[in-house]
Image (cartoon, rainbow, N blue to C red; front, side):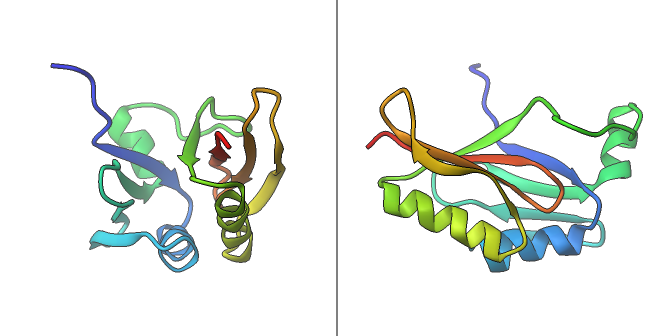
Amino acid sequence: MPLQASVIMLGVKDVERAKRFYVEGLGCETDQDHPGFVRLSLGDGSSKLALYEWDAVAQDAGVSSEGSGFRGISLHFITDSRDEADEVVRAAEAAGGTVVKAAAAAEWGGYSGYFADPDGYLWKVATAS
């Protein structure tokens, strides 16, 4: 069976804050909502996004919850146009995210930028056009 990412789970410091960012700010739909855990639908054909208390994720995995800086992961959203990419970055910033790298023409010929959600997870927004 080929590998599939059915759900991407992010450990977050404040589940309600993260839920507001993704639902109210970026338009995700709540699929499940429990104390300390929320699962979001990212749209047709996409993986689900789960938000779980940081320490609980670490405990579930059996690892230390301590750590900071670059986590070695970025999530990518591919858009159909530069205007759409700019719109996503603006929405993320308005919802409480941080623009890490303003969207601009990329050396590979496309257009991309990065924002971080309130917990510091990096999202790359890009288009090939």
